[in-house]
Amino acid sequence: MIVVPVRALPRLWTTAEARDVLTVAVDGDYADAIAAASSLSGIPGLVPEGGAANVARRDGMGTAFLCGTLVRGRIPDVYVQAVGSGTGAIAAWEASIRLIGDGRFGHRLPRLLLAQNLPFVPLAAAWQAGWREIDPARDMPDAEAAIRSISAEVLANREPPYALPGGLYDALTACGGGVAAITNREAEEAGRLFLEIEGIDLDPAAAVGLAALVRAARRGRVNRSVPVLFNATGGGYTRVGETLTLFPIGVDLTVKPGRLPDGVIAEVAAWVNSHA
Image (cartoon, rainbow, N blue to C red; front, side, top):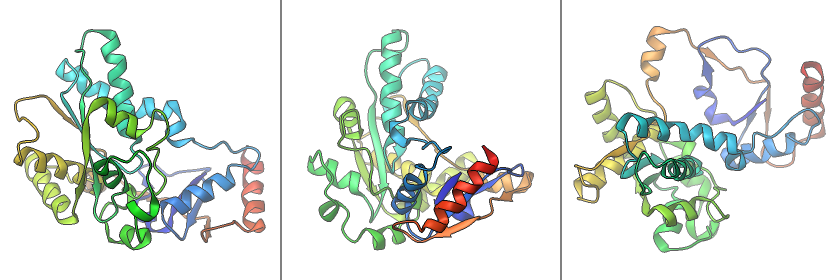
């Protein structure tokens, strides 16, 4: 079962026809979808994926860091990624600890250069101010309007694992670095640059991450001679559409934010019983 915001539906597709999938669209943002998924996960037969608390998810996300290290032969000095929850950065931190324990790839943690999309930048606001806790009123005022204004909506997580032990605050504290606040225009320019040089169209979130690297390099905050690993978290969609058939994932249920109606719970439970 997949639960997504309605606005994310155009980005939900596969290259082989999907079967036995129940898609629930929430007429809200990612926080609303997370809340709906949490409610539905109480139905017998469904298990929540777990998000940042899922060690398998973090280890899976950390494979990009492992791959980059193996290709280079050493832990990068700087790791660059756009973040919504920050789970990818936490995964890189955990992977680097294991690599240091191995002993063959260096003995220093990478500096984290992370990025969020203005005007929705709760992680950047809290970290730059030195706060361990995110205060919604202070760090993401008028969140709904801010989320509607950003080009990389997938980065709009209102409940990131920032303050909890082992979360993003601890990762940044251990590794050093920071969280940049990137405008839509900076991200678009970075995306055009990547397309020109690499021939690949970047996902809007990946373009935000690249924009942070471009800015840091231009301002001398990243030494151009040191190993840098940029995690391009998505892209190549134009090429995929040109070479493969895309199958949109259909919507089975559309719900409003807030408490789910009993009828929706019953319908999902019936679907689970017929497929489990």
